[in-house]
Image (cartoon, rainbow, N blue to C red; front, side):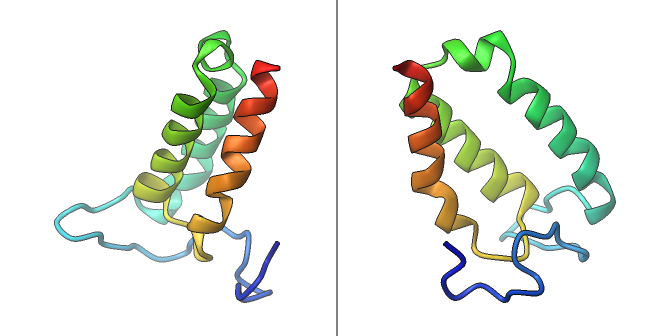
Length: 89
């Protein structure tokens, strides 16, 4: 699963501020709090009832656009879809 990800940095929250075009995602000091809130939402009734494809898209967008990990977030795109799809079964 790690592929070409740095084994030291892989799976870790970023420690520096990043910039995405004109967008400035939350600072590294906010990520742990944001992830806690995100996991609470992910386990909520609202998220569980969401269509699997929409849920996977929302997860991917949130992690990629707002949180920005050190490693390549694109690698979790299909895994998100699989997790959300399994909820619908």
